[in-house]
Length: 86
Image 1 (cartoon, rainbow, N blue to C red):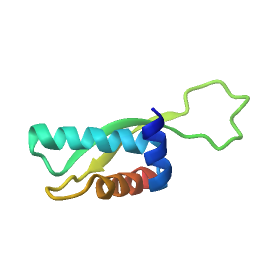
Image 2: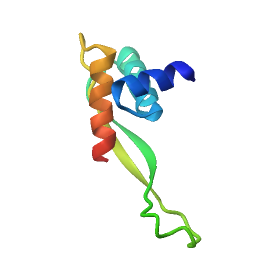
Image 3: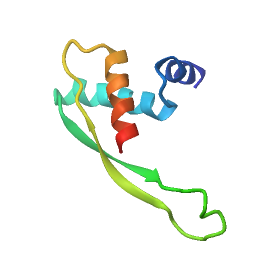
Image 4: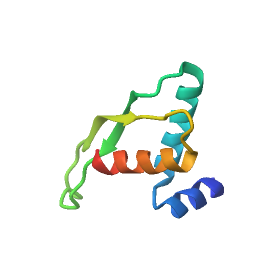
């Protein structure tokens, strides 16, 4: 877990983005797919909903595009940018 956090900090990403990029590498390696979607839950909160009971999540599709010859850091940067835009 410490190595994931260090890598995330170095890349200006979150540990989640690092793990999502790792998942992307595995999918690419075993399926040879270079463009696919991963459905992932996200939480939307404005901070004004602290006293409200309910589910404030949603599922979004994250597009991963690992290419042959791409370094892991390049994929991580791409994944980070995708996660920020989700």
